[in-house]
Image 1 (cartoon, rainbow, N blue to C red):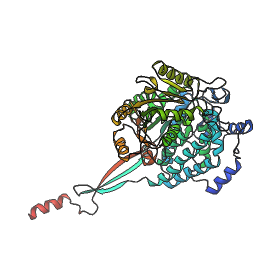
Image 2 (cartoon, rainbow, N blue to C red):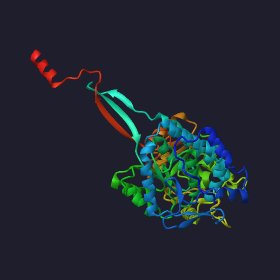
Image 3 (cartoon, rainbow, N blue to C red):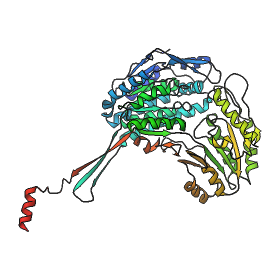
Image 4 (tube, one colour):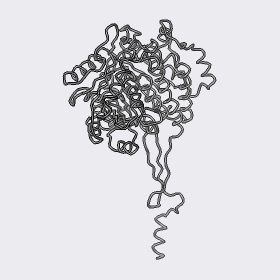
Length: 537
């Protein structure tokens, strides 16, 4: 294992040229894979807890294995944080709070920009590591590095744009000054499916705003976050500003951290049931919260659409990350006039998708994250078939090592089927038909979730109507991908609270303060002057 790097002592200690020199000292993995390349990346991953700028063992010295879902083999063992470690990490974040909040916005921006530059230099390292621990095809992992890096670049620019306002009150007697301050230490809980992008999407705005953080990465994919935290130290993040506590006891660690009055912000990405539990805990100290929760995205295909475009959009919206995304299209609602042709085209493409370990050339579908995910996908498919659905391709686990499920297409999926009700999180595409726009909108909105929706139509007026009528936080209109660092990501209904990305993303980590001061240009009236005015009258 690599010896952990020493923490940085100042936010601006390293110039860009020095950053480049440091990157050159760390030889990156070439654009290739194989046992040697894989081991080289794994050797660079710190396997401890990052608390107050130091890599350390868990309080009880416990560790847990991180497994390659494509092979079932253990990649590394990492420190298993205890609740005591979680509280210690929060104490470090609280101790660093004032110093980091007091840095100039430009200094924070430069740290984030250096982190972006380092990430670009090491993009092959991070892509390969994500493929190893999460299973996604290497091409998609490279895409995640590019996407995740954009949050560092975007929020490095937003750090210097935190504004305020100065206005006259309606009575004309004073000036109202509105300023924004960092909310304070934040607890960031990230999911397993996008281990780099979900870390940067939370850490970057928090640091840009002047907040310190405790990060709890997902138990299944902590390695990318640990390597990224090491990169942040190298980029100049001071000790205590970023702390990382991987654990197999998420509930036990989170509860005392959330209950601690030193914590000022909670940001969680994960399932809606867990989000509800965290919200109840956060109520105890009235924590600021951001929740990016479950989804059940509809994908609407109207009779006037370009079917080639719709098929390409469907492949992206459904099968990216092997369907393991909260933004994945879950319910394909296709107009009856084009349903059979759409199903034929999509089935032809899906049946030809190569399945295998993400490091292999040309792989489109990697493993699901674990055996429970395979069982869930198969249970939902079996339920749909029992209710009358037609299997077009796939519909079964893949034999051999690893946790693979064949990419699947079903048509004639009946209302009430779990595939239309539950978040699938797997490579299963379920189609049902509709006759009218009203019927399509009603079916699309028939869910407790409202994260994202997709719609394909050549009618601009219909597109405008769908923007108004669909109950969703985001809409992909004639596109199968909506995520962008410059845009507010988040949902409505039970898909969450708050937004990540865009100008809204940094606002989640800022508190608003209003100050009223007497009008400095208005003559001040003392009691004596008011008495004299009365006598004069």
